[in-house]
Image 1 (cartoon, rainbow, N blue to C red):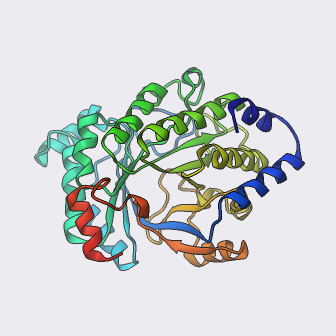
Image 2: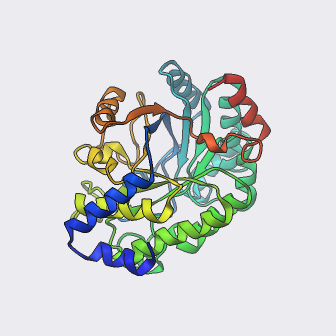
Amino acid sequence: MNREEAIQFLKENSINNIIKYINIINNKFKREYITYSKNVFIPLCKWCINRCGYCIFREENAKLMKPEEVKEIVLKGEKFGCREALFTFGERVDKNEKIREELKKMGYNNIIEYLYDLEDWVLSNTSLLPHTNCGILEYEELKMLKEVNASMGLMLENASDRLMNTIAHKNSPGKLPKLRIEMIENAGKLKIPFTTGLLIGIGETDEEIVDSLFTIKKIHEKYGHIQEVIIQNFRTKKGIPMENFREPSPLKMLKVIILAKLILEDISIQIPPNLNRETGQLFLLAGVDDWGGVSPLTKDYVNPEAEWPEIEELKRWTEEAGLKLKLRLPVYDKYISREWLSEKVYNKIISLQF
């Protein structure tokens, strides 16, 4: 599907074309399994330079999590059979003077050094594998963190500069598309298995959705490192600047998912199940093949109002669609090799015989 066809599909109201493309997807992409990752969510620090119009994660007086807090969560997660330690924090927290002081007292020059030590501990002392998603990182920071991460991530959200002048991103310098695209490309240069995605319903146009999908496609064709793309729906929350924004309709989400599968082809398409309890099963019909990270222990700190489904519930949703639920690692199987992983991470995976 080319750009013009994709835009026309989003704009038109044709149930016949939706059915046609769903049939094409299910004939072309034979699926037996829908995968998921069992994780613990570790919000290392909730301060952020960005003030996104849809965000409830940011806290003005946020503190840094202590090593003992992180280790307690990870060890509890191990007892629950978790395999992913998802580390996240607000973008460029080092710009916060109080956070810098906390880091200095612990002997660190910046949060990346602290993060590295925590993730190294996880690798050395547990059966969990770190995955980092913490906003914009420089090339050298990515290179450093690759040593202790099975995969990393950054939501593109949208490739349109126009959104920087809207309520969604006008106070968020880190959401400048060229910065996010540069980081995703740097991850490709470093051969880091990577997760990215789009945020649907923040004021973007149909053209901007399509252009964002083709931007991801172009990067992946060059580097081959994008293992999954999340199609995430904006959900309104009390107290956010975009509280009165309309959420994207299930039909709009369905059409974007169809496009994502047709345009991105060999990249896994993921939807967050806690944000799509009523519609997630239907999205499986459009080519979704991954439920993403689900935690039996920690909440989704980005969407705290949306509880994770139980694993048994996910299994029921999947099996009712004639598919099987399968646990995966934060790094997809096709990237488990010395070509894509550091020696430390690769040896850890092999030693545990996942």
